[in-house]
Length: 45
Image (cartoon, rainbow, N blue to C red; front, side, top):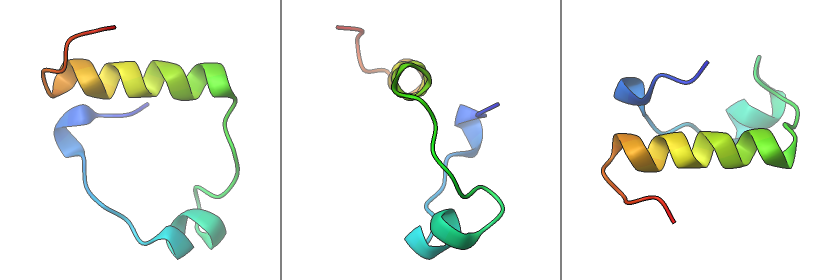
């Protein structure tokens, strides 16, 4: 679950070796990107 009201920046090393390490499939990434765009007011394409 991604909570858009809690968007922050992270060190890339944390994503590579931290508790959230790994990959997600492209369709899930697309859903996440669309949700973030909606949350910050970017119109859907």
